[in-house]
Image (cartoon, rainbow, N blue to C red):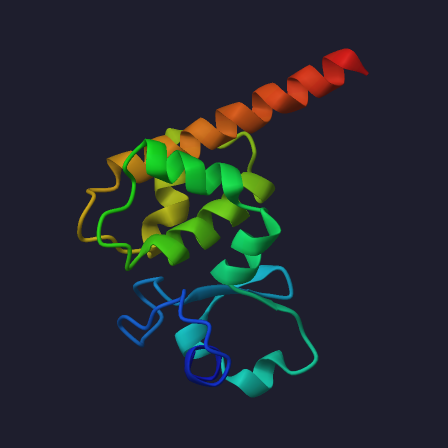
Length: 141
């Protein structure tokens, strides 16, 4: 996290607990979410690190970001990057996840502002939208 934030100037991921518990520091390393506070820069040497900035610029999580705004699933914003990283992994790996599974998936990310309901709503909205889009694409094929 120090390397990303201080050397590279990527401030989107936050240092919270610094024990890997809160999820605010979540980034992707070689396609899998990891806790940035527990990962040394040398461990990523030769790998691919995706941060919230890169995913945002690439438009990969635009639907999730829009749903978070529409559902007011962010308030102070401290946890938002970690929540979005976890949500991205969920919608990719578990596209048929139900509400209980969404809650379980994001349970490793703490939020002290929203009470989680709006976050779960936003992620469920995206799951439904993507499922509908996939069904529409299959139907027209």
